[in-house]
Length: 318
Image (tube, rainbow, N blue to C red):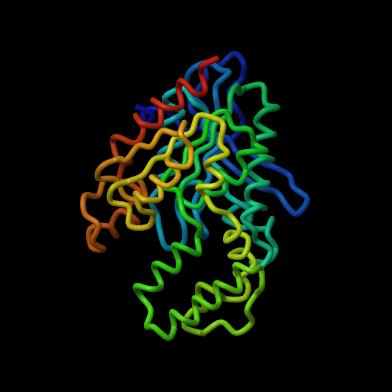
């Protein structure tokens, strides 16, 4: 339905023009640089509830794309929700894409800085007369960032979309145990123990440099301090936890752990959806990979109904 609506770049429509779905550029000034985002407005008259969408880990931009992936999944979610009457702001996180200059060095990245940026975006939206209640959708690592920000941001609704439910170091140990020889795993385990204690390690094994290079260690230290389930227990807003049955990056156990921590949360598992929110029935690599590189592949058909069913009462109710 939303594909039939025109995407207009630039200023929002005048008061005399009928509302349209637009892709309006937004900026957020911070002490260390400007952050950028896109606003998708509904075709119906406002004011509207608004949802802030945050991408996952690594260099993933506001559309859900990165150097090694091209899915357009977050762009699709934003446009689809706008067509359903919910405004959406999709952001490039600090250090990524248009917001790259706001993070001078990789070693300056912290999960808490990303969470503070979410709070700042939320405060900006609360002062925009076009919007009413404010929700948040965090995909993958964006789910953890939302949980860190939730207490201060005071979201009216929160969605963890294929987000982690366990501390990152627990996940890393599980993955590395399966994939590394014993001697190298022993080194990685000792290295993570140091990071858990807040100490950087100068001589990371070269075989593990991609994961534990010195410039990324401060970020890992910041992430290791947070347990998603403990954060989930403190969420007071309506809370939706969405998992995907064929997700090969975040397991259904993560969603169960988040749900178990918060009795008021709703847990939904979408059968046949993978981590990039597309319909993929199998979990083997040959079946999964095409969905990470096909921006034309649509969202899983059950995702949008699940989001709308949750967001409408949460953001439109009294």
